[in-house]
Amino acid sequence: MAPQNNIAPFIIVFILSLVCIMVSCSSGQHDDNSIAYNSYQDGSGYDFHAYPSPFFGIDEHSKFDNSARHGTLSLMRSLGASTKSINVLSYGAKGDGSDDTKAFQNAWKDACSSSTQVNFVVPGKRNYLLKPIRFSGACKSSITMQVYGTIKAPADRSAFAKDNTKWITFEGIDNLMVEGGGTFDGSGKIWWQNSCKINKNLPCKQAPTALTFYNCKNLVLKNMQIQNAQQIHVTIEKCVNVQASNLKVTSPEESPNTDGLHVSNTQNIKISDTNIGTGDDCISIETGTQKFQATGITCGPGHGISIGSLGDGNSKAYVSDVVVNGATLSGTTNGVRIKTYQGGSGSVSNIKFQNINMRNVQNPIIVDQNYCDQDKPCKQQGSAVQVKNVVYENIKGTSATNAAITFDCSKNTPCQGIVLNNVNLKGNGDDGASKAACNNVKLNIIGNVSPLCT
Image 1 (cartoon, rainbow, N blue to C red):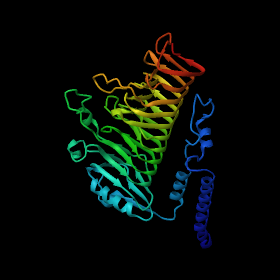
Image 2: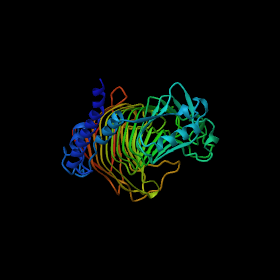
Image 3: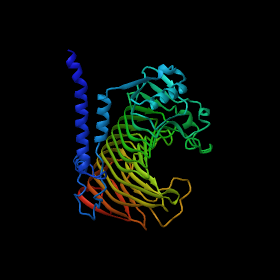
Image 4: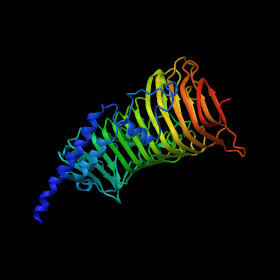
């Protein structure tokens, strides 16, 4: 039996070498901007070049990366010869509702300094109270945070006296995976009650984001529940190569500003098989986001799936290469939305919304270049963020508003290259009637489209 045991390490080395060779060969055939473009087209079910360039002028060099590095990372983790397990209970965590912040900090210090890959274990059937905490890199090896229990924020707002903008932050970490099927609970009720959007007599104040991932590379989030955020549930900012899957993100419909997933300044991100129901946008996509995919999304309640708002304060904003392919929205106050303030500049370009079911959704399709989030009317301004090359394909369902399709585009910077292909949105009335309102936009109609602009 001994000779068989001696062979095992060689088999592992051989498999890892073979995977590395395959990845290297694949990388050698394409530059970084063109990896697996064809496979992305096949996966989305949509051909970027199906329409003539006046309809959809996507840049040849604007392409999605594949996930080879993520697969290699997972294989390395599973086959690696050495994995160190760091259990927060060994560092003094109780998981009984008392403050476990110090234990998590000490456990992370050892995890981040480990030269071998780490499983950072948060055992189940316990409740861990964490005050605002920052898990920082750079770390020496890959870390998998396995959350099996419930991590909960304090309900006392004074715990955030030093910084009321963030609860849990992961910053500057490469090759991080957070998984396990556990729960992050922001204890947001006390924050919602003290919001100026709930009580107009109160001053408007910042509330914490529950989970913030900042400046991370090769990030995997999967099999988690994030609930009752103080404000935004999950922010992904300035990250590269992100996969988020099988997430459940929830808070009450009346909870203010509780976006589900908020993405900004991030490149190459895929969100899949995720259920989001909150008091604000299910997914919000902000400036600096490129190569974004979302598939298998269930959204509602909430404000829908939004690009923006962009261009506030006369700022410059850019979002490009966004695909939402496969989603069901139910009872949301918007469907798929692009919203920009007057006075901004930059562009929203190369966007595809496809294979989407709307169920009693207000404003199922809306582009609003005159967005104004204040009580008084916003000042009329000449410039605007350009909205161009946007495709809506295979979108069907029911609208809770009279206008199922709205394009309120800028007079000075009209919407360009907008395609409607096989769109059927009915009203909720007995006759199923609905309308389209279109200003400063020239539409390209393909297939059966209803309603049509008059």
